[in-house]
Image 1 (cartoon, rainbow over the protein chains, first blue to last red):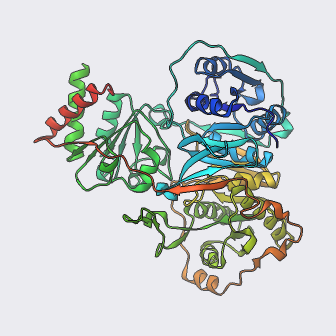
Image 2: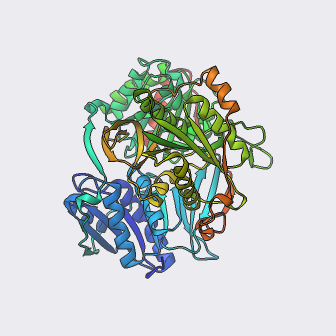
Length: 334
Length: 267
C-alpha cells in the first residue's frame, strides 16, 4: 500500500470499560518525536465501545487527532473485528507508520494486520528512531532471548508497523486536550467474527496478575525454595502495592503459577521498581525485565548475573533481608 | 480430525554465550532443538489424539536439510507424518515471506493428506521471538486464529481453546478450519517411547522444494520478497555502576536500601 500522508498512528488499546490501556498512552510520547521527524501528525486510533475516556486520554497525552471507531462488536477484542476495522482505516487514510503496544492483544492483531496489508512488522521493539539516511523507521528489538539486538527497516512498504513493549516509554505529563476527534463509522457483522468468548475462568482476586501494567514488581526465583517461600515475597509485594512475579525456575518447580512468570517465555514488564529476590538473572529472565526503571537484586551469590543489571544490590539471604525490609517499610509507612 | 503442527528447529538460546572479545554471539557448538513452544503445540495435538485416536497429526518445518532431525523428534513424540519445506530461494525470508511459503506448502500437503481442520503453531520461536508467523499463516489461508493457547479440545466442527489472559484465562470457541498458537501450559509435554524413536529414525520425510510450487509468487519469497530488512545487529549493553549494599546485618542492609530508594523518590 502507498502512504497517503506522513502521519504516525498509535493504536490505543481499550479495556472492556472503554478506558485506555497504558501502553497506548506511553507510545504517544515517542510517537511525538517520530511524527515530528517524519513531518506528519500524531494520530491516536481508538477502537472500542463507550471509549470516550480513552479518546480523552489520547488527547491529554499528546495526540493531534483521534480516530474513533465505536460499536458493540468492539467491546471485547476479536482478531476479526479489529483487523477489519484497522485495515479499513489504513486503506482510507494511508498513514506512513503505526505503533501498537506489544500486549497479548497487540501481538495477536499486529501480524494479522501486517499480513492483510502485506507490509512489514517489527515485533516487541524496545527502541524507536527514524533512520537518518533513508527516513524510514528504525525499529530496534531483542532476539535470541535478549542476547542480540537487531535494528530493522521496512523501506518499500507502507505503513511501517511495529509492536512496542509496554513500559519502555513513559507517558508525558498530561496537558491540554487539543485533539480533533474523527468519528469513523465502520461495522463488522457477527458472521464475520469467527471466534466466540465462551467463558472467562476468573481467577480469585488474589490470583489476578497484572504484571505488564504494574508499577512495582516483586519477583522470586530459585532461591525462594518452595511454594511457602513465596509468603515473604507476597507480603513485601502487599506492603508496596506491587504485583508478584517469578522466574522460570520457580514456575517450572511448581511453586507459583505461570501467569506470574517474567521473562522470555513469560511476561515482559517495565515497572518503576523491580525487586528480584533469589533470582540469578539468566538472560531469558533479563529479557523480560531489564527495561524496568530501577532494579533491586537480593541474592546470596555475589557472582549472580542479576547484579550486572541491578541499580541496587544486596548480597544476602532473602529469608533474612526480605523480612527485614518488610519490617523497615512497616515502620516508615505506619 | 486432521491436524497440522508447524515446527521450527532453533538453536538452544539458553546455551548461547557472548564472545567477550569480539562481542558477538557464539553459535558454534550450540545444540539445535525443536522450538519449545512448537513442542507445546504438538502436545496439544497429541492430547486431542488421546481422546480421538483416529486423529492424524502431520508436522511441517521450513528450514535446511538438518531440520529433518527436529521433524524426526516430532514423529517420535506424537506425529504420524512429516514434511520438510526447503529451498535456496526461501532463505532470508522474514515472517511475511515465511508465512507465505508455509501457507503454499500447507495447501500442497493438503493435496496428499486431506484438508487440515486445525493448524497448530508455537506462540513464537525462541530465536526470533516475533510471534508473527502463526497469525500470518492464518491470514494467508483466510482462517480464524486464537493465540496464546494453553490447551484445545475438539468439539463438533471446531475447537474450544483455553487462551491465557491477564485477567484470567478465557475459553474461546473457534470454527474449523482454524489456526491456534500455543504458549507454555502448566504440564510438561510427553517424551517419546523407544519404539516410536526407532520408527521415527526410519521414517521417510518428503522434501518440498521450489519445484513443488510452480505457481508461487517469487516476488514474495526470500530476502528480496521480505518487506523488513535487518540494518544492523549488536550485543546489548548491560547497565553498569549499580550500588552494592554491603552491611553487617540484613536489618542494616534493609534500612540502607529503604533510605536509598526513598531518597531517589522510588518508594
